[in-house]
Image 1 (cartoon, rainbow, N blue to C red):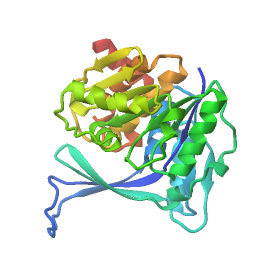
Image 2: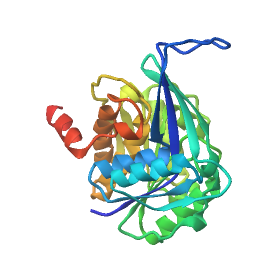
Image 3: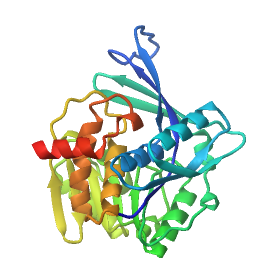
Image 4: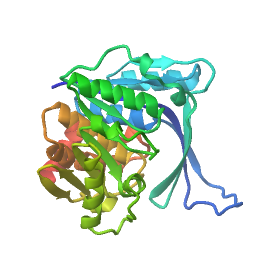
Length: 304
């Protein structure tokens, strides 16, 4: 099995659980708070590593206690963190996550994540690796790193979240683009909603394929996912699950998909596995701490 290298954000998630969200100007009591490792990059690296795939994390943190906690968490989960660079000045990224009624809203203070640069890479990409990036770090660094990985023959995965305007040529270096229906709508300018018909979702995915992405995976929450490649369209049904917290479910999907790509599966096969992994992750609180092990995913697959 080849290695997964995740380039992206590292945050400390401050998770506040309450019975409901407060109205504007309202204060409610009785909430619970947890401090949990997160950031799309870190989440995806943990998801990959817990499935037994050799995984490395590349990113930036501040010079503070949160940075030490995040590095320790990566080490405890067998993620190589030698590519995580400490920068002076900005604090480690923090995400404030409000969890209520089975859903979440997130506000991010990016901090050191926005100081990440492609010059921080300690190792050049290799042809037998899978490189993963998102949009929570500077776009110029993401573009350069994916271009270098693609040129080296590595497989590349871009999670286009949270959506940001990007250069026209970025997708030419992407083997698999992953995004939800909101991000897909933003990326293509096509009006999409959770209830949009599959034909509309596929049409939007093909817009991104026309820009260079070899495969596009649209994650649709309770509706599952749609995989669009040069050979056709496949719908992946969602697995039944008891939802506790959806934070990090998309990151679990991306990390699990990358881990299976590293194992030699096709994008469709990898997406099917990733859908099962994501269904496991929403049954626990938090993002990175909720990522399932390979044994847990295998047990759910056996019941499918």
